[in-house]
Image (cartoon, rainbow, N blue to C red; front, side, top):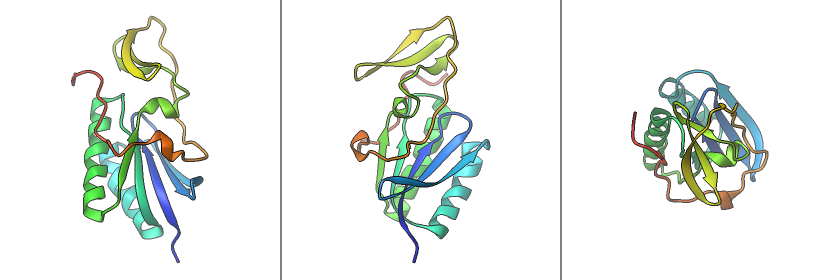
Length: 152
């Protein structure tokens, strides 16, 4: 019998991170340097063949406009086609609330519960990581992308 799992997608930068959670605990992960548009369908198909996917979670931004858009369109489509609920949260939950690159010297920062942009002279090194435990309270059914600024 296949395990009932939830999948978490963090696709805002390279590498792409996908976590497999059973009863909120991380049991497996996939890390890929490939482009989201190339690898998401392959990974998703593998996950559907291996597990009984009960819910999808993703980081809906801010970050790379195209990365957010590709993840949202793909996951929203799979949510509808496979009848799997989709939930989202901002990327600051996966990088210890560090600034996230916007464009040039402009970075997204989270102040209290508001996301804004700030110019930073020194570029911070930012990486994302999968949590060991999936906290459902951090996610929302409102899963539209958070672009932060217009497409550039």
